[in-house]
Image (cartoon, rainbow, N blue to C red):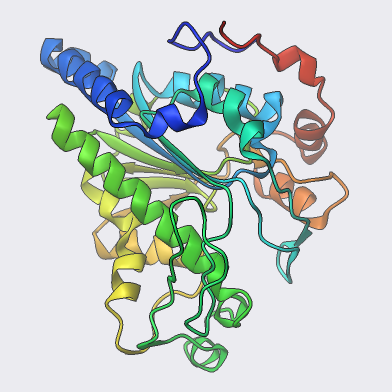
Length: 339
C-alpha cells in the first residue's frame, strides 16, 4: 500500500508550482537541517530527486505508488522531489538498439493524484509541446508560452555524429527535439533545486535523476549507503542516476555546453553518453549498476523496448521483471485521495 501524503486534502496541480508551497517546503527543510547533528545528517542525508520527462505511465498506481514507497521514501527522511512533467508525448520512437515504443499522452488531470502522492517541493506539468524544431521555428507552446530550444549557431548533424563515432538518431532533424527537450527540462529542474538550496540555506548531499515511467519494483537501498563511495555516480541507463552533490553539475553540463556552442557539435549525441561524459569530466566514476531494482512501464508488454529494459537489469529474472511491471492488480496500489 502507498504511504499517506503529508497533507490533509487534495490540491490542484497548480499548487505545486506556487511560491507559497515552495517557500513552505524550503522553510521546513531549513528547520530540519538546523536541528540535526552530524551523525543524524549522515543517517538521513538531504536528497533531491529530479523527476523529469514525459509522464506516460506515471498515472498508473503501480508506477507512482512504487516510485513513492520504493524510491522516495527509502532514500531518506529528507527527500525532496522536483517534478517537471510533460503530459503530452512524442511520436512513436524506434531505435535499432531498443526497438520501438508507442506514445502515451496524458491529460493534466491524469497526474493530479500521482503528484498529490509524490508531493513535490516544486511541480509543473506541460500540457503541450514546447515546439523545439530543428529549423529554428516554433510550433504550439505550452501554458507558459512558446520556446525554441535549438541553438542555430551549433551544427549538430548526422554527418558530424558519424565522424566522431556517435549514434546518428538524435542528430536527425525529426529526433533532435527529443534530446533537447529532455536536457532542457533537466536543466530547469536543476535550477529549481539550486533555488531551493538557497532559500532553505542547505546544500543537498545527493541529487537523483529519474523518469516518470520508471517502475521501482523493489525497495532501493538508502542514500547513506550510496554515499559511502563519494567518488561514484551510480546509474542504470539514464532511468536512474544517483550523484553525490559535488558531481551534480554533471546532470546539466551537456545542456550548458550546447547552449554555448558555436560551430560543429563534437560532444555527446545521446543522453547516456551526455551524462557519462559530464560526470567523468568532473572526476566521477560513472558506474552502471545492473542490480538497480528498476524497469520501465511501456504502453504494452509486447513492445520490443519493454523486454529490452527487463533484460538489462540483473536484479530479478526477465520473466519476473515483465510480470511485476505488467501483470499487476492496480487496485492493490490504490489509495483514496485525501479529502
